[in-house]
Length: 116
Ligand SMILES: Cc1ncccc1N[C@@H](C)c1cnc2ccsc2c1
Image (cartoon, rainbow, N blue to C red; front, side, top):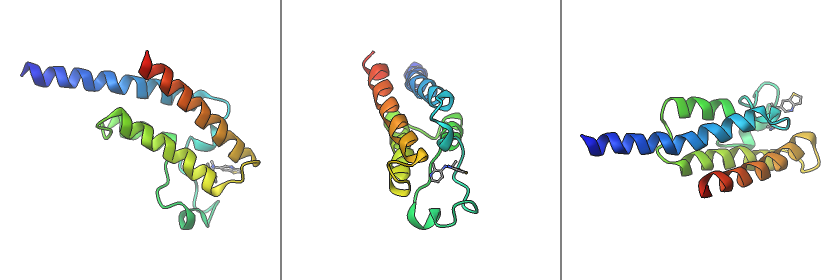
């Protein structure tokens, strides 16, 4: 019983760092392109090129529903957001530049939080 409780407690600690960095990315001034799923009507070719769309709201819902078993799974979805962005958007476009900024921001914060 205690082992179970301990594991759940550890699990929620792991997810605290995820919730924190996700909140920071949602508030970041360059986070705007990634807040919601890309609208396929607005970008008709998106689903042709991007096989696994991901965005911050979807990640928030997955955290809420405990769909991330490890911090690594959360980090993978975050990197998916920015890799999709680099596939679809020119580096010099507003969205492309925001993607690079947010990717750098995430990787630095992820390091800070996990080595703390
Ligand atoms: C991250 C991403 N990748 C590819 C396409 C779109 C997006 N983001 C949406 C929100 C977006 C990005 N930029 C604009 C500009 C006018 S509407 C709109 C919506």
